Structure formats: structure tokens, C-alpha cells
Picture 1 (tube, rainbow, N blue to C red):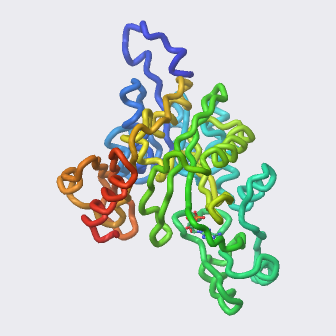
Picture 2: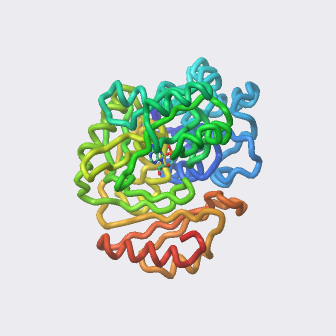
Length: 380
Ligand code: AMP
């Protein structure tokens, strides 16, 4: 049921609330729930970890994503389902759909985004430039692909890769065997290594009625394959091209919710698609304080069948991830224009524990603010 279809005049306030089920209970689920509570929306997460960080703000069904009993319990509690990661088992989504539960974004977006070969093939079909690529199923395929694609190249597992995991850069032919071992001898794609000048992402949201809104693009830098800093790029010369590529994907997939498209900028003017994420995205965390409506609230609005909110960004802003360690809240909050987010997770090397957003009047001021935040921890 859409939130707008429930009457605002019901006697018991619970009767006018809808419940959104989120598959996954990490920080994205937590921020989705935090953004939906003011709208009178309640949340249930399905997630195997008992100490999942979204459990603080949502009812938590503890169970594996493919556990039929737990899926049934989860399904019985919610009106509509969304998810916070792309590797949701296809069978589970099918099961929920058979229960007549709407699943947004639609299952076809999951199928494309969880398999790099399907994803890159779709980019090509839609006329969206992407690095040259070849499917690789064994070491002989890999040797042939190296001849076709050329070196340097990046070998990536077709599924289950994220934050640079399941990837190996091949610079010379004598690294082929080692790269094949390192990605685990699984189905892969080999793609050309792109000497990009910038990495950007565009985050878009599409409503159930097909209305699309875009946020200003984000300029992103990674460290050890993990997003480190994302800076809002106002009036970016590539904004409209990025939006055009985003629109092609959203319309083709009959998409509902937030979608992130990650792009390489080559020679200042060409965009090449790297990947999509069919969900709220780390490069859009600065929208929480920076935009008229955050990516999280707009995702919830789309999924709940509510009107979308504005995506304008009145100031300049940026986000810094805290990975492996997190500074004290007080030291971040002493910085002018800074906001602090602690996901409430146990510290572990390589784990995203929280982030800071910085909003100031000018881009130069924001960049100075990012440096002040980086100086607080060893992550810089
Ligand atoms: P991915 O998991 O595909 O997003 O890759 C993680 C990061 O590796 C990207 O954000 C880039 O910084 C880098 N990367 C991935 N693919 C390529 C490529 N074809 N050429 C150059 N760098 C890449």
C-alpha cells in the first residue's frame, strides 16, 4: 500500500503508518529508517547479525536472507520491501513478490547490478560509454582477453565484488596467473584500465509515477578501494551528461527509488560508466545535511509512493568516511559546519564506522573543512 492511500483521519495513528521492510541491517538501513520516522513510517529489517546497527531504529528480524521461515515472518510485518545491498538472493526477492509484496527498486535492477557482465552489457545496449570488457571463465579466456583488451587492465569477479574486493590490476603478462589466483578463479570480466582524471557519481531518484530528480554530482576519492571523501560538485560541466545516462538506466529498468551511477571522467569531457548501485549510496551521504531532501528520505518517499522532495543543494558540502577508526564526536563538532554520524559499530580494520559531513558557503571553504576533519584521524 502507498502511504498516501492510508487515511490521515484514522483513529489509531498506527493505522495510518506504513511499514517498510529493509533487507539488510547496516548503516544504510539505519539512515533510511532515521529519515523515514518523521514521515510516520516504521521499519523492519531482515539481517543475520544480532548486533546490526539498524536494530537501534527498526524492528529487527534476525535471520539469513534466504531463510524461508524468517522471510515469511519479515513479509508478514511489512507493506513494501526495499534493500540496502545488491546481493540479495534472487530467490528471496521472488518469494516476497509471490507474497504480493512490492519490492523496490525492481528485481531487474538487482539482477543487473549484482553481475558486472550484465551491468556492462546493459551500459553498451543503452549507449552509455564504459571501459572495453571481456567475459572470463578460465585462465585461457583471461589470456585471450588480455590480447583483446590490452594492458593495463582490471580483472573483476562478476559477482560479490565491492569496495575494490575481488579485483586485481594486471600491468604485464607475467601477472596474469597471479591475478587469476587472487580473484579466486571465479567467473570474471577483464576491463581496460582507465586513466581517469576524476571519479564522479550521480544520484537520482525515480517515483512510482516515473518522475525523476537528480542531485548535483559528487566527486569521489578512494583509498585502498574504499570511498574516502565525496565532495558535492556544483554546476559540474558533466552534470547533464551524467543525468542523461542515469535517465536511460532508470527508464529502462522501470526503476523506483534511489539509484547511484559511478562514472570515470576521461580527458575532462568524456564519461565512462563504472557501475550502478540500486540503492542509497555512500557518495550521497552529504545530502543528509547538504540537500533540501536527503537521498535517504527521497528513497523512502519513492518506495512509499509519496511525492519526491527537492534535490537542490544551497551551500557547498562534502563527506569524509571514518574507516577502521572514528574520532570523538566533540572534536568533529568543533569544526565549523561539521556534522557527525556514528553508526554504532564495533571498530575493525577496513570497516566503515561513521562519517562527517561539512557544509560551508564556498567550495574552497568546504575543501579546507575536509582537511580539518582528515587531520583528526589517521585515515588521511
Ligand atoms: P569498483 O568496485 O568497480 O567500483 O572499483 C573500485 C575502484 O577501483 C573504483 O572506484 C576505481 O577507483 C578503481 N577502478 C575500478 N575499475 C577501474 C578501471 N577499469 N580503470 C581504472 N580504475 C578502476
